[in-house]
Image (cartoon, rainbow, N blue to C red; front, side):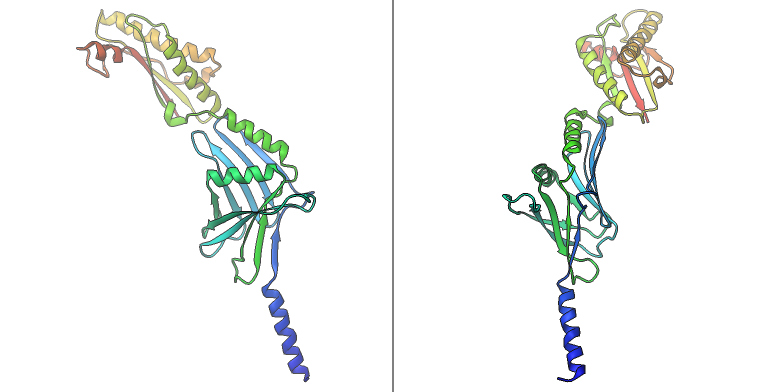
Amino acid sequence: MSRSILLMLLLLSFAGSASAALQRYVASEHESRWFTSSSRLYCSLSHEIPIYGKAVFERHATGTLGMRLEVKRQPREVGVARLVSRAPSWKHEARDRDLGQVSYRAERTPFMLRQIESRRLLSELEQGMFPTLSYQDWSDGRDEVQVSLSAVNIRASLGEFLDCLAMQLPYSFDHVKESKVYFAFDSSLLDSTARRRLDELADYLLADESVSGVAMYGRTDSRGVRSYNDVLARRRAEAVRDYLLKRGVSADKFTIKLRSFGESRPVASNRTAAGRALNRMVEVSLLQ
């Protein structure tokens, strides 16, 4: 066999072996770390994958659980990856589990998993498994890529993340940004319904530092003397403010001067009992 033919065979052999190469991305036992970010409005559990990118499980208040995978090198086009939960070498009794397929997009966050998939991955990680995505590499498709989430050192952070989810507020800024607190006729006392609404408002104000101010507008119906109604409207606004202060809301939040409209600027008709009941209230507006 001539030297040129032998060289060609060697090159073909090398090319064939290169086409079957495996690119494996996973944090080693010593590198594997999980980090939590916890508040009553946002919870996250993140994990760095060396060279490859970062996985983040997260949920915003009133949102759904999801997992995103940020990458350092984004794909050039859309595609599909296989998702398998792999058993590490030290779990001799465990077997790999096929979790189906996951589509990816051509962007820096190609993988965006839904709630049902994210819950499954967290369950697999809790059991010590390594959820793994497999696909043809995004450069020329000649190699197989496997990227895994490591279950090493996850238990403490996972516990914190689950605690955060359990304590998350069930409402968002849109739910509390405009609140109405109603009063009985000729009264500035807060009833149980008003206190429950203000408790929600206080919980949100204590959780969201982005709220820069709280404005309150006291109102009454048209019955009685106008000058008396103006004073009553202000007493109602002060009652709301004082309740929030007792709940721990900082006085600095109340940068907007209390305003009382008395019976002026009604929000409903004062000609009916139902309309007058709607006018006996304090409007609370949150500013960001």
